[in-house]
Image (cartoon, each protein chain N blue to C red):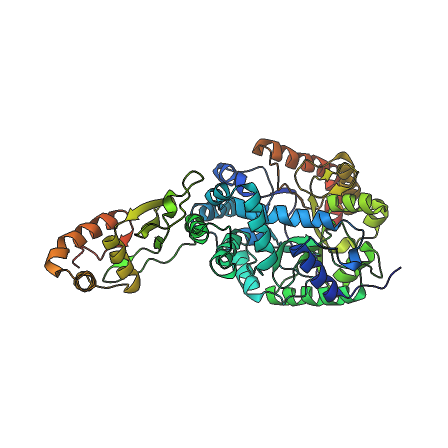
Length: 283
Length: 247
């Protein structure tokens, strides 16, 4: 079993184009690491490419993929994986994560779609994760996604997640907001889910905001600041696991950089009471 | 509990429905929030394309633009995993997959191509500068000839017929990464086309080739070609050999 080997700790933020110029111009951002979707940056040169390089020379970068369709039926895109591997080497990226979902079928759909919670999907997806890990020659982390429909399956979400990461022998990117969104939308206890996660596989955490529809249904938009119950779930996670590296995701309605960095500081503030736990875990 | 779905059949059915979400949702998802996914995907695709085609969008108007993006999503199996490259798939669809359709402006495919080239050049990766003797078109100098006057088209200027003469345009990127635009004469376009076709050619070969193509004398062309090369060399559009352009 691969243990999370990243040297990351602290709080990071997702790098988005509207903030690129401001972030690249800053001498040193008060963030422990940055994260990008490699599909937004591979093959990008010119001014933007130089700005990215300037940032990755000063801050560790992790890759959080969107297009691999790890649970999909189309063949794995090894041309993409080859360029991903080169991109990770170029920017010294220690970790690549993807979503437990599919996003293509006879062509890309450019969004994350839910897998059925079935034995067949476990076997199929785990085999593909293993193939990717073999190709990249390192473990990858798989994220629990929010889902708004659920095709008939044999197991629940938690059993499915556990079965996939166990059979794939991969890491887990635990998205705290997605747990909240799914537990609300599908009516289950988030604490019981949290207690059922494979703790020793969790590489890092995601924090994000969401949007509540008029009928109470929650959509995982990454367009707002995280809400109090999600911060509470983050505390529950830290209490069990110590202050794992945590990334703030914000994709839409981007606030001014200072405000976003304030939210990163808020993550650090939530981490600090658990710092002693980190040393216990590390020891 | 109902029978578990087959993974591959479920993905095929759901993906096919998401591309054309007008009909009934797949049986496995009946009564669920499939419309939410249809809306999320559509907004996503529109968002990815809108930034690259502002003029085209304005020319078509909101509803025709939405319909066009819907057609693209329904009909074009997009292969690129890279989000910034999705506009290239759209341009390809307009130029090849879509075919001529009633209601489409004649300039549709060319305007889309031109708008995308501006973006594509701004983000193009660095390319090793060719070295050695002879003349080269710079890697980030892209000449194009369009049937339609794409550089003049806008919501208030939408030609219904192409003009008699094509538009010869050059997009180039300077050392700071800034993209510039030049309108070329037919003769200058031919000069750049020659350099693109025969990288590393000598000054004399260029003059001779152009003279043959234009039915002019090399002596008459030489001063104009030299002046053009010096001007384009200064802007980094043409890479000159060390010293004089005559090399």
